[in-house]
Length: 400
Image (cartoon, rainbow, N blue to C red; front, side, top):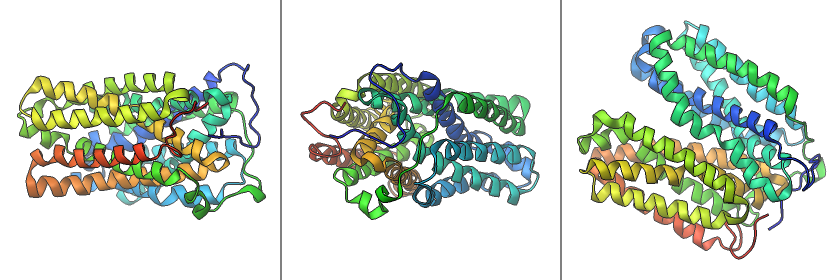
């Protein structure tokens, strides 16, 4: 498997690991996820503040996802030739503007527009992040670099969102978005000081969307992302009604805390081992997710088993973004950013699909149908990963 050799990438095997730059990317991921997920915990207050129903306030999450979904591929395609740091700064400034407007706006329409801009910024940032991280690190540590850059995601989900929800209750929801703007100003200074710039892709080497899709390994990776993340989002979106069926609806926060803490452990393990064990780690993640789904199905009335299954689910999911982005970047080579934009689009499709498919299962067959549905999707992800032994999730070689 060839490495990600990109124009403008300057480092050697002896160079120190670029912690400062990678942690800046991790902070960007943290702010991105917090911007996306925070409204979900503040819907009543946001609805009251903007004079709309909770369902109306929920559309702040929807338009954000739409922005990411529609922008990632076109923006990445159009900006292949641009230098990377100004592009990264554009995405970060997009969050600053969007969150500041959200904090100050009293207009529902203006707030929706700001959330759409935030989603567009997220689509661009996610398309850039993995390729940027890989270019910062020496060849044998690219996977670890991506893991560090992605660490902000589970931190935001396990710590940032609960803390933001608490602060929203104490200080008000507008103050939360104002605090995110302050964090973003700090991030801008950090990026300017510590993150190096890289050139874009030369005109003669740029690939088309169709060309990237035909690269060996890209389609299997995208297929695994869709099935695995769809299964995750069915469960994550409808965890409360699932737990209600088990008589544990009052413990939803505790279950999600267990999931979040296990996710942090997972991303640490993946970061240590990914550069030599990409395939094995992916198969283990899928197997753990299958085990968790089976436990949710067979022992859904046993609180101890639910907590144990939640921990296993976190171990399965925490490092998956790093695994999939590393697999995509390695398969795409110089076209890593365009491949990442496809992955972002597939990921957001799975998020939307989780709400739709999970809702249909819940409505037609009840909460007890969720776990069997997960197992079918996880089995599909496992079959595609196992089959992609030559490209995508290669076997029998060191991935360094």
